[in-house]
Length: 264
Image (tube, rainbow, N blue to C red; front, side):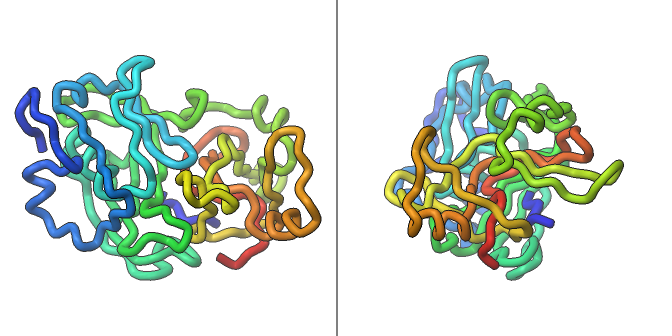
């Protein structure tokens, strides 16, 4: 239905570019880097991370309510390196064009503990994202054995029942698949990747396999022009979404489009 794509340094050392000695030794030619500045996080700060939150356009590493690092999906190198440093060595697979679903580029897929899956694209998509991220469990063990919570926006986790959220969400923010006992949903948790604003890191996505018609969500209270509405009707709303089995969340992923008419 959709592309489920989805090294430790000294205690006080600041790692420039987010690259650890072990990671730097790897062949990283298959990881796209689209931001000039990469994350710089000390190992001491990283060890305090107890939650990773997947947002519409990046990952936030948190220590309680404090943000330790905020990594853009435009920066595949920092995304992979920070997860390596926090969670340890992932499993890796090489993907060819289309392996992860229709319109999916080639790259390398990294999976940590069967819980976090990052597809680092060999070349960025035309709209700028260099990774696809899927959260498959509600937590994962760090390299030190500590439990790290995995969430989407507003604390939504794999395993949560989102029946109330589905009931409250507008039709533009959800899609039903199947019927009866076999019904599943995709629920948009947070919009992002705005095709009208490519300079701020908010762009549309062209890598996931769309299936159902959708409509773009504009600024609250606003109404798009006819021309804008036609374009939005094709591109839909991209961001971080939850996939469900019934009403229970099974995957949280971004970028993940809702209601797109375009083939890619």
